[in-house]
Image 1 (cartoon, helix red, strand yellow):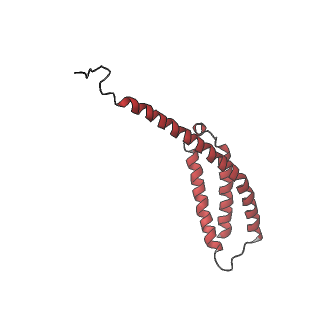
Image 2 (cartoon, rainbow, N blue to C red):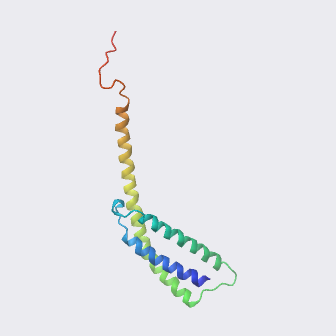
Length: 127
């Protein structure tokens, strides 16, 4: 069971690394659903990590030498995956902030012109 989960974790991590390297740091250059697919992979991976955590919590559990080899490979993949994901997160965060600022400024200008109730005509209010 543990070995199966560990191999599945390794395969998912390889796939994540492959997908993460194909994602462009500019959101508009990515295909529809590409980021969602990456998130699904992360969710699956987290489920497997949870299963492994439960399994290794059993008293008397020990890793085999094969398991240790897979774990070493996972560490290498994880170390190369982290900078890629962090870079994408920062780039997307900056783009979202820029979009938010643009939307906020647009609403300021729209709000300034919405209260013109005269419809463009001049109404003299003097008595």
